[in-house]
Every structure is written in structure tokens, then in C-alpha cells.
Amino acid sequence: MDSNSISKDKKKNVMQSMLLCCKLYISESRNKEALEPIERAAKLDQETVIINKFQDRDYNRVNYTLVSYVIHDSTGCPIYSPLHQTVVAMVSAAYDAINLEQHSGAHPRLGVVDDILIHPLARASLDEAAWLAKKVAADIGNRFQVPVYLYAAAHPMGKALDTIRRELGYYRPNFRGIQWAGWAQPEQVPVKPDEGPEVVSRARGVVMIGAHQWVAMYNIPIMSTDLSVARRIAQRVSARGGGLPTVQTLGLFHGEDSTEIACILLEPNQIGADRVQNHVETLASQEGLDTEKGYFTDLSPEMIIERYMKLISNSA
Picture 1 (cartoon, rainbow, N blue to C red):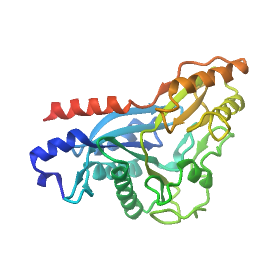
Picture 2: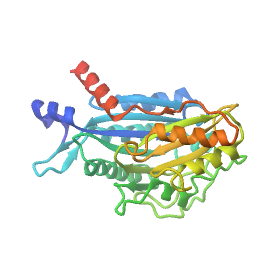
Picture 3: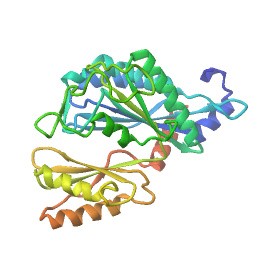
């Protein structure tokens, strides 16, 4: 099924209500020539909208936020979203333009395309997000022969992203103890992927693909280059370290004169950025360190929907 077979009235209705959001994380931000074909691929289908782009030079990582609608059959099952082919086209362009063996950065990663996360927006459901994640995963695994690991609602048992990452050695820097460079893992993956081969292309690595209710990324700068302190603070903030529930953290180098507490807020409506900020400030003060106000790496769901609606209205 394609968008041409959808009635105009029905299409207008779903474009305004049944929305899926894709956060696509790619291991590159310093090479503009590598990003250009990826962004061209994102614009091939006008029914997929790039809502936001966040680049971090120190992490050498970029996040694209894309939105489009989802269509169902007469029984209510999802059968089509323009996001599907757009994401696969962007992944194809990324594999053509980027070689993981030549990549380095201060943020962990296991692949050229490191993470693809699908969120439901507006009236869409988590089941629909999981459907799209699994469709994209099958295409990437089969077409590009890349090991694909499903997580959260896309995984049959709801396996958490951080669990898979630990199993694959994601959190262990392999260059000077502070950076990630090239492919440093065995070419035979230690955990069987959900899609694709069990042998890794060192140029492409592996990819995580998941579906989850809204997750917020919030980073807090620490005015210190002592990474051991940043890691200690990060551990005490995280749920895993006995800190705040539903919060995951990393202590990372960020620039020449600071480190950063990179936070994943799995339930931002319960444990939000203000609470995390206050906790980090308290812990940093105990270490004799100053912090700066944190920042989100993406827009809120409400802002994303508002921007999407404005963009599709302008293009109508």
C-alpha cells in the first residue's frame, strides 16, 4: 500500500493524529560532506518531515528527529508509514558515507547507525511504534547485512537498551580510557541479534532499534576535566547506582574544559529535568565543582507535533 491509495480526507485525518516519531542517531557530526547525502535521503519523501537536528562535535554524533503518519487496515492493524522507507534510505546513505573504522568521539557507539528509536505521538500507540521498529529492523538486517538488536517494546521480552549495550561492551572506551575509536569488539557478536548476521562489518558495526513511550535526553555540563569525578556523580544520579528511578546516566568528556552528565530520562513526566538538575548540582557541590544549566537534545513531544502540523500545513 502507498500513500496514493489513501483518500485525501482520511490521509489528512491521520496526518494530524496518528503520528510516529523516529530519533535516528548516527555516528558522525564533524564531516559535513558525509551528512549531506543522509539529509538528502531524508527529503526524498515529502510526507516525512525532519523536525529537529542535533549535532555534537565532541561526541561526533548527530540525532535526526523525523515524523510522519501511520495508516491502518480495516481491522486496525498498521500497514504503512512513510517513515519506513525514509529511515531505510537514510541508513543506506549513512553506510555509504561513513566508515566506523575511521570514526572517533567522546560518546560510546557500536555502529555507524547507532540507535533508532520510535515513539508514538498524538493518538498513535506503542504497538504501532513497535510495528515500525520491527519493519525497519528486518530491512536493515537483511538488506545491509548488519546485526540488529531490538529493545523495549520492539523486543519480544521487552529487553532494555542498556542491558543489550552492556552485553556488547558499549560502555567501555577503547582509546585512552576516554574515547571510542573504530570497531574494538569481536567480529563475531557475543549475543545473537534479532535480525541480520552474527558477523560484524567493522565499517558498519551494529544497530539498536527500539520502540518506547517518550524518552528525554538531557545533558548537564560539569566545570571539571576530571572524568573520574563526572563518572562518580553520574553513577550516584542513575537508578542503577541507587539514585533517581528511571534515570540512566553517563559521565563523559565534553570539550577541553568540561565533562558532562549525559542523562536518559525514561519517564520524564515522573522524574524530569529539574529534579535531575538539582540532584547533579548537589552532588557536584559536594565535590567542590560548579555546574551549568543542562539542555535537552531534542524538542518536547508537544513542540514536535506543533512543528510537524505547521510544516505540513505550509506544504499543503
